[in-house]
Image (cartoon, rainbow, N blue to C red):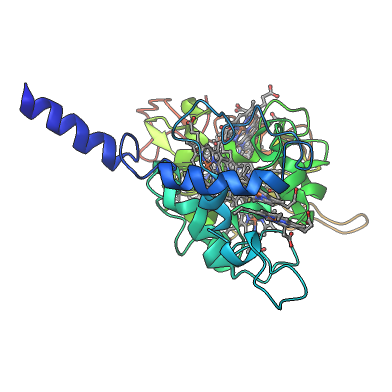
Length: 325
Ligand code: HEC
Ligand code: HEC
Ligand code: HEC
Ligand code: HEC
Ligand code: HEC
Ligand code: HEC
Ligand code: HEC
Ligand code: HEC
Ligand code: HEC
Ligand code: HEC
């Protein structure tokens, strides 16, 4: 029994709970009483309902946990004209180094699983502070509100703002999703701050059906969804970076009579002959695959409907599947 309690305590303290890690020490709370003599609730914005300000929560930080003891600020030393600044000041014009500001937050928050990869992350190395995204003295930290988070990100990421405004996009502007559904802004082991260990694993959290396994998978799909899709938005339907056939021709030169990569038999004349010119001679059988099918309707997808992978067993062909139904 005792062993189990001890284990529980270790687990709790590793998680940052239960121990000193996520709490204001009593002496810090006492020191902060001095602050509110001058900075009363009227002088600060209303933050009474925020997670940090719950007076009854013993884990909630005191002023000095985030701003430092600030002794010279509290009691202006004699002979000094202006009241010195607190030890830790936030905001754009602050003289407090970023790592000191972030260090204050991390004393309580670095053990959270969400932030274990903050050190060395793209945002950390770009000198962002926690307060670049988070507001503390407010009941409404925009970055935590699904429908408003993107505005915080867009302040620095203009390109994604443009992409999200395109006709085909994830429903982020509609407030149904947020950037942090795919990104962990605090850092990750995946590329581009992907929330999971890879881009595909991130996509599979919602598009599980694309994971397969398929009898015949399509190599670029299993490698990286963003080869064909721009997850932020596109003018092409289904967030495709470009439309078929160009999309597919980045890697394939199929159905070209006698062309490199062509399969045997006539696949139609491709590319089609320019007006007034004679189309190149074509040999082989037609198999019903022709120019019309490539340039009209859904192009390559007219036939290769299962571009993400197919379970078509197609035992008749040594290289079966062909991403058809
Ligand atoms: C004797 C009154 C007094 C006390 C005590 C006091 N402050 Fe201040 N504080 C001020 C004044 C005056 C300013 C400058 C005007 C302003 O920004 O409100 C200020 C400014 C600040 C600022 C903003 C600095 C900036 O440049 O943006 C912070 C943060 C701050 N105080 C925190 C604290 C903390 C934390 C404590 C307690 C450890 C504290 N203050 C105690 C009077 C006081
Ligand atoms: C969890 C960390 C944290 C705690 C606790 C905290 N502050 Fe702040 N404080 C900040 C941050 C970050 C800012 C920058 C503005 C913001 O995020 O709202 C700030 C800004 C300020 C300012 C500048 C004025 C303003 O609104 O921007 C004053 C004054 C201040 N804090 C005083 C206090 C006092 C007094 C306490 C205790 C009652 C306190 N702070 C507790 C983090 C904290
Ligand atoms: C003394 C410990 C302590 C410090 C220092 C501290 N926090 Fe917190 N923070 C907490 C506690 C406790 C909570 C509430 C956790 C909970 O209820 O799950 C919290 C919650 C939060 C939340 C979630 C708020 C919500 O509504 O869910 C954010 C964001 C946050 N802190 C950011 C910061 C930032 C930014 C700083 C530095 C400016 C900071 N914290 C400094 C203890 C601290
Ligand atoms: C680039 C913007 C950005 C920066 C910088 C940032 N955060 Fe966050 N933070 C967010 C977003 C977005 C969320 C909401 C995450 C979600 O919805 O999954 C969040 C959530 C949180 C939460 C509450 C939920 C959780 O993940 O536990 C805490 C606590 C927190 N941040 C602390 C910090 C601390 C500490 C720092 C600095 C080391 C920091 N943040 C830096 C954007 C940021
Ligand atoms: C559906 C998942 C998803 C959503 C939602 C999402 N992203 Fe991304 N983001 C990605 C993927 C995947 C990449 C990497 C591939 C790429 O750049 O297209 C990426 C890359 C990025 C990059 C790096 C671009 C570069 O060229 O290096 C930034 C910046 C970015 N996203 C910001 C945002 C912002 C801001 C939001 C919210 C408005 C957001 N993302 C929403 C999936 C997403
Ligand atoms: C204060 C400015 C700022 C804010 C706010 C901000 N970022 Fe960034 N972000 C940067 C900088 C600077 C970089 C690194 C340079 C670059 O890639 O543009 C970056 C890089 C990124 C990257 C690319 C990471 C990589 O590995 O290339 C992603 C993804 C990203 N941010 C997502 C977000 C999301 C999501 C938010 C909102 C929750 C956000 N950012 C808020 C400044 C910001
Ligand atoms: C948090 C859940 C979530 C994640 C993660 C996610 N998506 Fe989506 N995806 C959606 C939702 C919601 C829709 C919109 C469905 C609708 O509008 O009917 C969507 C739609 C799509 C569409 C179809 C758009 C259309 O117009 O038909 C594509 C393509 C897509 N996502 C690709 C991706 C890729 C690639 C990733 C990984 C980078 C990804 N998604 C990650 C939720 C998610
Ligand atoms: C080789 C290019 C390519 C790759 C790589 C790719 N897709 Fe697609 N995706 C397409 C095409 C083309 C469409 C349009 C299909 C259609 O119109 O029938 C599409 C459509 C979609 C759709 C919307 C229609 C549907 O089938 O549900 C989703 C969601 C989607 N893709 C998710 C993903 C995910 C997740 C990944 C990574 C696992 C991925 N895609 C990788 C080409 C690709
Ligand atoms: C980024 C490169 C890339 C793109 C873009 C791409 N593919 Fe592929 N595709 C491949 C690779 C690699 C293979 C596997 C080749 C092999 O096994 O010999 C493949 C295989 C195929 C196969 C043969 C499958 C089988 O069962 O043998 C078909 C059909 C196919 N792709 C159609 C398409 C279509 C249609 C598109 C456009 C929607 C497309 N591909 C886009 C790289 C790509
Ligand atoms: C009219 C239907 C049809 C259209 C349109 C079509 N294909 Fe095919 N494709 C097939 C069939 C059927 C096969 C199987 C091989 C065979 O039977 O000769 C095939 C085979 C393939 C293969 C695998 C063999 C090889 O050549 O390497 C690739 C790759 C391919 N197609 C890509 C494409 C691309 C890219 C497009 C669009 C430019 C396209 N296909 C348009 C029907 C079509």
